[in-house]
Structures are given as C-alpha cells and as structure tokens.
Image (cartoon, rainbow, N blue to C red; front, top):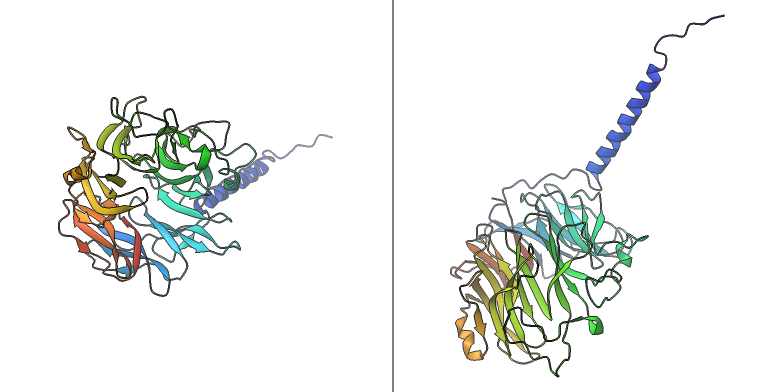
Length: 430
C-alpha cells in the first residue's frame, strides 16, 4: 500500500537546527563581547587637559585621582586601601586601566582593573601579578606584563594571549616563559629574558620593550663604536675584554613576530616613540661611563643611530626621554655623575630631536652647555598639545606632581603635598 508523505516534513527539523546554530553563534559572540567584566560605562566628564595619578595617604591607602593641569577639580576615583599603580588612559580618554592588589585567587597578586563610569571592574585573574597596562592606540586591546612576558587582552578581559616572548609549544602560560637567561635576545633556541617595560608604537603595529639579562649572560658588547661611526668608544678595560650590559632595547615589528630586533644595550636604557612610529629616542648609560640620547630608526635596517647628546666619563647621563607630540623636542632627566656610585639629579632638559650638530659633553666644565629647565624634575611627560610638561618632585610628604610650560616657565605644584603622588599620565582626550 502506497503512503504519501506530507510535503516539507523535514523542513521544520532543518529550521530548528538553523535556529539552534544561530542561537549558539549568537551566544558565543555575546559571551566574547561580554568578556570577564561585561560592558563598562565611560567616565561622565570630559577629561581633556586632565591628569590621572596614584596617591598614597598617611594611612597607607593608595587611590586613583584625577586633576586639572592647574591643580583644580581634584577628584578621587577609587576608594580602597589596596595597593595600586600604573594608571593608563584609553585612547579616547573615557576609561582608565590600572593594576590593584587582589586576593580573589587566594594569594595576593596585582590584577588589571578597568574604571569607567561605575565602580572599578577586575579584568584579569591568575596567580601571577600583572603590571603596566597599556592601551593599543585603536582602543581594542590592552597590553600588560605578567611574569616578564607581554600579554594582551580585550578591554573586557577576554581573548587573552601572550605576544612576547612567543609561548613554547605545549605551554602557553606566562609562568614557564621567562625563567631562562639567554646570551643573546634573538637566539630562537633559548628562552628570552624578562621584559621590564614596553610601549605600543603610535600606529599600534609595533612594540618596543626593555629586556633585562643579568650576570654572566648579559649582552656582551665589547668595544663597539659608540653608536656613531668614527666616534671614540668607552674604556672597556683590558684589550679585548667584553663589557656586559644588562639592559637591551628591542622592537617587535608586529605582534606575531617571533624574533625582535635588538637596537641597543647598556647598563641603563629608556625609550620614547616618535609619532611617526618609525623612530625611537633611546637614552643609554653604559657601565663604562658613556651616555647619551640617540634616535634609532625602526623601519630600515643597518642605519646608524643619530646622536642628539653624547657624554663621556664622569659628566652627565640622560634618562627617561620623552618625545614631544610634534616630534621636534626630546625632554629628559639629566643626572650628574660624581663617582662610580654617586649620582645627582640636576633636573629637566629639553633638546632638539634633530640637531644640526649633536651635543658632546666630555668634561664637567661643559655641563653648562645644557640648560636645566626645572630642578629635581623626574619622569617628564608632554601634554597632548605639546605646550606643557608634567613631572614629579620630592615634597615634604612624598612626591608632588608639577606642570610647567615647554620652556620650563610657570611651574605649578598640582598636588601641593597632599600625599605621595606618582605614576601620573595625561589624558589623551582632545
């Protein structure tokens, strides 16, 4: 007997399957967007011209504050006694990330928090402490350090991955990435030394970082020419003896590059990106009393560094350089070297980024060539419009934050001894 089947009988099943798949995909997309902390409201004020910083009061509590560049409208943004540090603005100036000591996973460890319009939200977890959160310029990624490795995540805490050093096969956790001490930072057969600081290029493509390798495995530079063909070199002791320099500046051309480019190494190093994302201003102080600020290109190989300031012997050493937004000036700390272990901060200097002739300091009498714009000025930071410089000085209750004009005039104490204030950052908001 012939039985006629109802036409379209399989259609409802297919439709149900499609609905199920759609719901699953939708849930996955929603979960990825929701992340660890979900949606966070933005700050309810225009932060243009404002400065975020941490301050510790007499009770030991550390909190995040925001203030205008003239010291007005001081506002506390957090209210807890937990340790905090390293605030970083989102590119639009509407959110702030920082790290705070948390016991959510048992033993206390610093974790990344995100602050917008509501209360701070914890965005990272795990037993390893996190540090130095730094937004990628597109606002879609936040980087941070964990166990000496650079990791990234979405601002909602999802999509965590390690960028550098590349994870070993079979182990993607930060705990097994940074214990080795290689003799060279680009040796693919050895683990990489820990990163202690880093920064995205302004276009968000490359990463520059400082790596540290101590002891007998420190970078051996020997009697290398001092970054300029024909220049005399620092004394390296006995003929042929190598000089070990523990810190190196590297550049990762893009996040998926496994091998970085080693630009320079010294006993102390610091760097700042130019806004063209093609150059770095690097401050170097070797263990053999040769110091300076040099401009390295990151887009072309085998080009010599361009010297801005070169000092030799027990004279001066620049540190913590900061390139102005228009790429024309470099601000830096200037330290006087009196002996092997005795150094004194003179203050803030500002130098042309592309001088017609580099400045050479070879005797203490020549230090006068450098004009100190602000005494006892630490960690210079340019305002987004390049007209002002933020720095800190020692005060009666700890560090005080100051702002001056680009020529050093009109210095204003914006924290006025309210506590120990540190880690100050300009808002990038226009």
